Length: 109
Length: 114
Image (tube, rainbow over all chains, first blue to last red; front, side, top):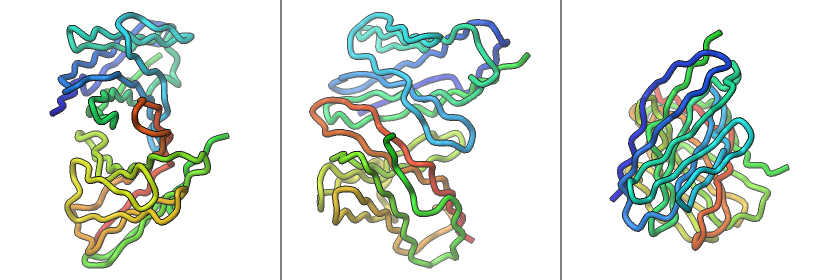
């Protein structure tokens, strides 16, 4: 079975750093995705972690700890356009992703 | 530029009607997926297909069926629409299983059943 947990909502200030956490319990875990979804739009791919550690991609970084069943998405130098939902998804033995309920991030001036 | 398109952005149907939602991808992806997205519940998998004429049930297949006659097209069918099927429906595609490839999503169809 699979269980993905992430906070429902977070708020942050423009220019700040925010960390969105995701915990998972996934049989035969393979890897973890992060997607961004702006209101009324389709989710778009941000990152995919298979190995432990931090992967940096511009202002966004994603971290994975397989032993702890834990990942986070780190957003630096927040901009207003980063206001969106962030979806965590874990893949298990079937390689079909199971999504968490999403974290709504609100960035205010 | 990769593309997943869905037949309608908004759709209003009556209870009991048969509803077809169409999805087309131009990336030659083997895998295609149908999700529904509801507030507070996130993305839930209805059905997926890993090849033409192949289909697998997801987490919430009840009340739905699918058809994949061609590689690029994956259809979701609501045999007899009900009000609890009012939702946002998202189609996605990806490269084959065996490795986890990112999914590409269509813009979604917001279906209202009255």
